[in-house]
Every structure is written in C-alpha cells, then in structure tokens.
Length: 409
Ligand code: ADP
Ligand code: ASP
Ligand code: MG
Image (cartoon, rainbow, N blue to C red; front, side, top):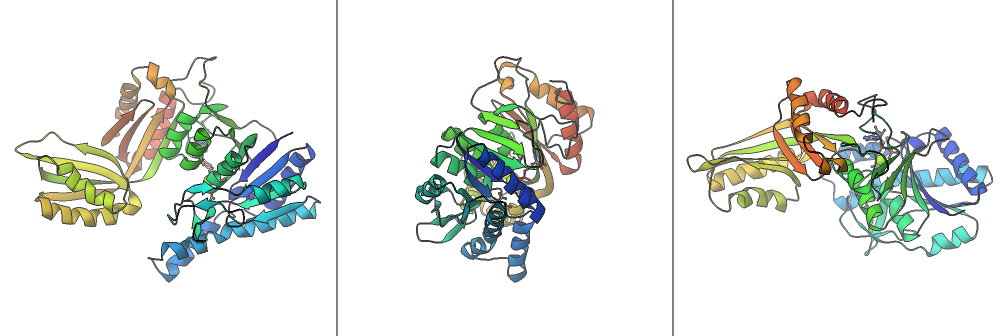
C-alpha cells in the first residue's frame, strides 16, 4: 500500500473507450489499497489540433494566449476521466494546474515548475478520493496560465510525485517501456528492464521522446522512482529508471540509440580567423533565444575559417536571417544552410570502460555509404549529424552492429 502517481499520455486517453479502460485500471489499484494521483494528457492529436487552430488565426500569437488555448486539451480529459471513475463507483475529483497551484515561472510555452500546493490533494486522498490533475499546465505568480513544453505532462507527473513523496511515478504510454531505440523505426528493438537516469537523460535529450527531458531531470534530482509502462497491457514491469548501474550482469557497451530528425545545419564560410569570431557569429543567435547544438570550426587557412552549427529545424529561417546580418558585419564570404539534417546518437554508460565505440559507429556508417557531417561526443554518448534521408538506415545498422537486436544482449 502506498501513494502512486500515474500519468497517462495522449493515446492512453485517446478515445472514450480508452478513458474507461484507464478508469478500470485506476479502480484496480485503489482496490489494492493504494492512494492515487493521476495526471492526464490531452486526447491524442488534440494539442496539435489546438496549435493548428491558433495558426488559422495568426502565425504570431502572443505566448500568453497560445498557452490559454493549448492548455485546454487537458481540462477535457480530467473531467472525462473523473466521470468514467464515478460511473464505476470510484470517488474522484479533477483539478486544473491552476487549481492545485502548480506554480511556474512566466516562460510561456516552456515554463518551469517552481512549487505545488499539496493541501487540496492530501485532503482528497485522505478522503479516499482519486485526484486527477491536468498535465502540461501551470500558473505563474501573476495568475497567468502557462504550459510546460511538448510532452510536459510527464513533468507534471514527476513533479507531483516529488512534491507528495510518492512511492512511485508510473508513466503509462503506448509502448511497454523504454526500448533500445524507437520500436516504430526498428521492430527488433528490445525493451530494457532498467536504464540509468544518466542514460535516460541523454536518450531524451537526443530525441527519444518517450519521456520529456525535464521529467527525467526532475526525477533524478528529487530521487523519484520512475517507471515507464504500457496502458494497453495489463501485465509487465515496464522499464525502471534507476540510479544504480547494472553491476550484476556484464554491462552492455551501448544501451540505446536515439535520433532526431528535426535538425538544420548552418555554415558561415570565409570568416576572418580572429579572436571573438565565434562569439560574433553565435552571440546574436543565442540572444534571439535559439538553441545551438553542435558547433564546428575548421582549421584556419589564409586568415579565414568556416564555422558550422546546428539548430532545430523550426529555428532555421530565423537563424539564417540573423546570420545574413552577421555575415555583412564581420565580412564573411558566404552563408549556407541545409534543412534536411538528422542526428543519430549511441548512448551507454558502458562506453566509459570500452574504447572503440566511435570506430565501430563510424565504420558501420561508412559501410553503408552514409556521410558523417558533424560529430560530437561526451562521456556516455557519440552523436553524428547525417543527411535525413539516411536516418532510418543508420539507426537500423547501428542497432545491429552494437548487438542490440533481438535476444543479443
Ligand atoms: P504519450 O502520448 O504517452 O506521452 P509519446 O508519444 O510521447 O507517448 O511517447 C511514446 C512514444 O515514444 C512511443 O510510441 C515510441 O514511438 C516513442 N519512442 C521513441 N524512442 C523510444 C524508445 N527508446 N523507447 C520507447 N519508445 C520510444
Ligand atoms: N498534450 C501535451 C502535448 O501533446 C502534453 C503531453 O502530452 O505531455 O505535448
Ligand atoms: Mg509524451
């Protein structure tokens, strides 16, 4: 018996029947004697529909009003789920983010949670009630509705689990755990029984959207026991995200492969090779709030050099406009860009004690004739930027080359 926070994603509540099945699962947990706080996302497709609706009005909505609109999807699901619970005799009350005072900063569309008021939640739990909270949304100190970024309901779930010191935070989704790579791309992908926070954080940051990055950061920081499970299956332990490294079995070198299609590459050619150049190029991009991922500067020749970086594809046009101005200001020769880039990364704590991961990765890609355009490494990951058209092939061949397919552990 304990306090469990369960989060159900969009497909898990995607239709009335699915919502009824979620209600039945909650009832089962309650019968077993658990106290339950449930976080739900909007029904699948709903947040995209709402965003599209705002675009029909304007392509430049004020962030405050954008949040007012896109946060509504979750309000529908909390009400529907409570009705489904009432219909099977389970006491339940719904709350929007503002009603349980999920206090955030004022960074609309990507707000961070600062605190949560547990009082109404504890009161309802003590009263035998299931507490159903809208994911993805909060309220800032001035009372404005905020949202937490795409996939943000995961973070609502983990933040509630941290605030309430829950025994476990269970993230229910449409796959039965975290896999060695996205099972939609590689059917041979294997479910992992456990993965370390460190690895999960890399996987999430490098494109595996099964958990929002911030939810993993939050869970690591507040020591929340975090598990990813399927809402479509009634059995299975899912994947536990843990601080413990696997010391009992032989550590696999690579735990997973992450990828992101959403990359664009920008290059400034013929830049005067003088101190401050990188700052003069990248400073204005950072000031425009555009995140730069990889950066490469070539060896200077004849007093000039080339600088390349990657940004999210959605930021490409803005970043190119800025570089156009920078080029003139610093007297660079030319700017170029390519919007169809993708990033593939191999991730694993086992890499620390195994040399040769990079060479196996590069050889595997070379054998398929896939050209690597940029490389970046950290202690537990190697990422390469390649042409998007080779992305799926690259993920498949790397998955096989690192022995992640099927039963090969
Ligand atoms: P939800 O709506 O429940 O939040 P998401 O679509 O956000 O679900 O996340 C689940 C999806 O994440 C899966 O359907 C799967 O395609 C994708 N995914 C990407 N990488 C992985 C991975 N390594 N393991 C499992 N799922 C992954
Ligand atoms: N509904 C939001 C989204 O689609 C939040 C979430 O599902 O986690 O991004
Ligand atoms: Mg999600």
